[in-house]
Image (tube, rainbow, N blue to C red):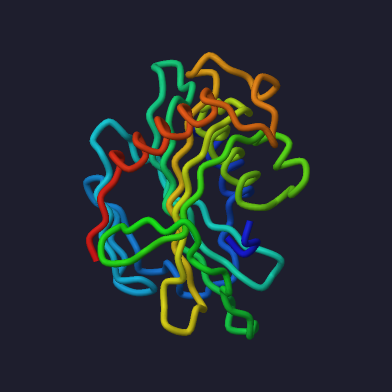
Length: 220
C-alpha cells in the first residue's frame, strides 16, 4: 500500500456504486484469477496458487490519495452463515502516471517467496479503528465489499504481511495479506497490550504466520 505502514439484485447496484474503477495505472489491468491461481503478466510477472480451502470472491479496485491505484484479489474461508474465519488478499498497486513517487521501503525481516525476498511482518490490530483513522482507504473498501456480498468480518484481527517493490524502478508493488480472527485464539486485544511481549502473543503470531505460508505458493 502507498503508506509504508470488501446481495445480488439491488445489492449489486450498491456494489457498483461503492467499487467503481479508479484511474488506471496498468498495475493490474491484465491480472486474473483462474481456478484459484492468480496470474499477473507484469509488475510483477507472477503466479500465486491459493489453497483449495479458500474461496475466491472477487477483486476490489482502489486509489490512494490520487497518486496510486491498484486492485485487491480477495480469497476467504467462511462459515455457512458467511462469518469470515480466514482471509487472503493479493494486492497489486502502482503510482499513477502523474506521480513521480516510488516505493522506498527497505526489505526488513526478509522472507523469501519464489525467487524474491519480501518485507515481512505479523501484527495484531483493530480493523474498525484503522478504518475510522483512514476512511475510504483499502481496509474500508474491502470491508464494504465483504458486507455487500453478505459477509461479516470481526474487527480484532491478526495479520501476516509480505511486501516488495514489483519492478526495477519501484513504481509498482505487490503485497500478500493473511488475516485471522483474534477470537479464534481465545483472546481480545485488551488481553495483549500493544507494547508488551508475551509467550501468548508470540505463539499466536507464529501460528497465524505458519497458516499464512501454507495458504499460498508463489512461482515467479
